Length: 198
Ligand code: VGL
Ligand code: ZN
Image 1 (cartoon, rainbow, N blue to C red):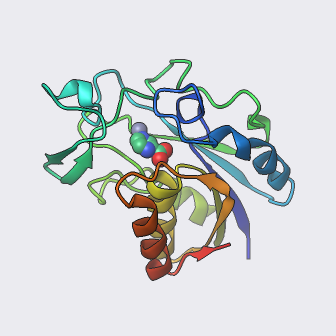
Image 2 (cartoon, rainbow, N blue to C red):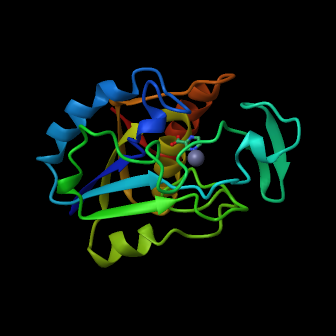
């Protein structure tokens, strides 16, 4: 058994003061840094959108942030502009220990498709390459922490479980957006997919 810690999207825009701030997002940083010491492999994900990304409400005439739209691949929440490539908001939280990371995997760079999951874009078909990386290193067990519990952590954890990895989500080291019941739905979805929520 080889295990890895997957640290999801601990970036300035998801922390208080950021463009898509998650309440208490910064509180988890010390605990995440400490947990890295227990893992032989540490992987960071980074939400990384081009300006004018199709998941931004500002790219859709008259659309309000947090409203829904229909994309060719299915329903999609329209977000405030966030994590624009190279911006301060896209940078990792300054206190996050990024030096420990073996790999930083960026996602959401395709202008036409959002990517919550670290494994597949939101069309649930286009791979990011993370699965191949983990398998070629012989990694079978994943622990996930980060932001946001109900979006990127949820999609990453359920995809990983479906791919056959043993997945644990450390709920104490995650924080949620929780819009319109999204946290409850995420907890149910993760349980149904066989994710262990600790
Ligand atoms: C995320 C919404 C949009 C996340 C990323 O990291 O959970 N949520 N982009
Ligand atoms: Zn995003």
